Image (cartoon, rainbow, N blue to C red; front, side, top):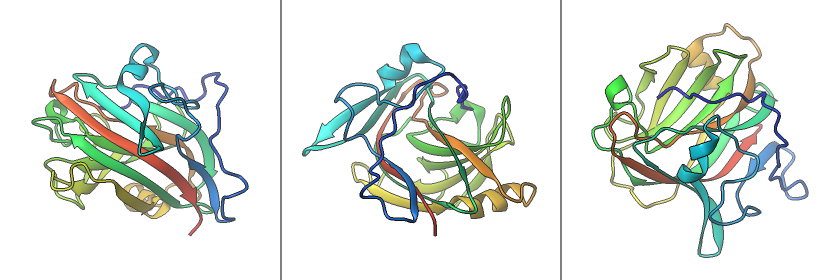
Length: 222
């Protein structure tokens, strides 16, 4: 489903989870959940659906390490983190994710099956209709697939992982977002500016269940 949120301009007092003394010079910012309270919605993130955001997303702890857990049962609640950066200077996005429960009958190319066990978006441009690059772990589409959102051509998707063979395993990802943006949208914006990061685990179209985990989101130079 297309993100409904994203009033990133909303008046929020954002709580930054940074490690300024430990970050290498080439890292612009890094987000983890170590300072958040377990079983609570993480600080600094927001959603237009304030009523349900805490029902879907909560910080969990495992082997002494905290991460963000998402569990969506017949619902779609995107959450966003506002941060502006220049992609030419900091094009690299890294994160870890873990798929747990796939929505049954999903197919991100169709409105009726447009649900995600895990997806990470980088959002660009102004409102009310921003552009976004969506990185997803699909149950049915092959890895490497590129597709338009079935609801808007301003959201372009890239399938990074496919299928259930790695269920329950943490997987590290790294993308050059600038290169992906130019490949998907062309050279229209010579120096594109990212406006934030969006996470979405949802199952409202299939009315099933989707669950997975996110952690260690980092933006860096090459």
